[in-house]
Every structure is written in structure tokens, then in C-alpha cells.
Amino acid sequence: MNGLKYHRILLKLSGEALMGEQEYGIDPGRAEWIAERVREVHEMGVDVAIVMGGGNLWRGREGLEHGMDRATADYMGMLATVMNALALMDALERIGVWTRVQTAIEMRSVAEPYIRRRAIRHLEKGRVVIFGGGTGNPYFSTDTAAALRAMEIDADVLIKATKVDGIYDSDPRLNPGASRFNELSYIDFLNRRLGVMDSTAVSLCMENKLPILVLNLWDPDALRQALLGDAVGTLVYA
Image (cartoon, rainbow, N blue to C red):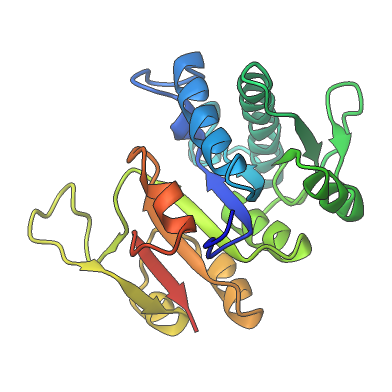
């Protein structure tokens, strides 16, 4: 489609995006809603890759509070992201969007192993690619995995989909007077210690000049408007 600002995106989704009103787990209705938003932008001619979180199924910090080994807790979180990736793949394919799941931890009976050139080829063929398993290494968040994969596939932007319409100077759910930023530099983001995305991921984007766009996933028009260049959410860039 002419007029697109971004032609290839990496969409970072939290595990909670699939949780719905439940306290944990996967709500198939939410997966279907997200799949519809992805189909809309995919049909605009945008290459879409997705990195999933796993917080709806496992939160490593809860294990750490009980003395669990950090690496073990992180590996369990990576497996949770693969379950989410498969759920979203199923929702996408049921509405006619061909999708591939690639995992950083090999499990060939359920998904492809992550191979950069194969992922790019899938995108070139018009398939959505979902990356599960984080980076495949403990001690790294799925935010960092999203930044890494975005650069590996030569994405134009990393889109962090959240529950709020951008980045605020404080939590707008707790502070009604919080102010939203339309734009931020990477340095400002890091200096303010904003908790929307971890500092390792932001630093990686800064070093490689990859813009980050934070927007509200639950606004049904936000993603499409952002791809058309409308002022949506908060843009973090050089």
C-alpha cells in the first residue's frame, strides 16, 4: 500500500495480552482479537514479525522469591513464550494468515528452529513470523529478544504494544495527572528510568538506530494509523 511509513515491523506482545480478564493462562478470544489486528496490517502490505512474552503463564520472579535458580526460572519463561506463540499462530491461521513459529530453543516437533535467513524468506513470501523462546539464553528479557530479532530481520521499527497509549512520566493508572510524551530520545528514556521497556533492549536499539514505538494495543485503530504515519503513541528515536 502506498503511503506506508513502515514496511516491516517487529511487534512485541506481552504474555498478558493473551490473558484477557483471567488471572492467568490464554484466552482464545483475546488471541482471535489480536490476530484480527495483525491481519489488518498484514493486508496493507506490511511484513509482520512478532515476539511473544510469557508472563501470563509463568513469572520467573515468583520462582526467584522461593529460591529457584535464575537460569531455570528463565528457561521456564522461554517455554511459556512458545505456548503463547503457538496459540497466536493458530488464531492467525484460522482467519487465513499463513504463519510460522520459530523458536530460539529447538523443539522441531512443534516449531522451526530460529534461522535468520529463513525468517526473512518467510516474510518475503508474505507470511507472519512469530519468534518464541526469547533469545534462547537466560538473563535476557523478551524485550531484548524483540530488539535483537528486529535488527536481524532489518525491521523499520520495533513496536511495543501495551495497555496504555504511549509513555508517561509516571504510571497513568495510578496518577491521573501523568503526562504523556509524544517523542523521546533514547538517552532521555534511559535517564528517566522509564519502566516500559528494559534498558538493555533500549540500548541495543540506540546503538543500531532502530526506532521504538509504544502504543495501545487495545485501540483497534492505533496500529494501522501508526503504520500510515499518524501521530500515535510515543516514538523513541535518535
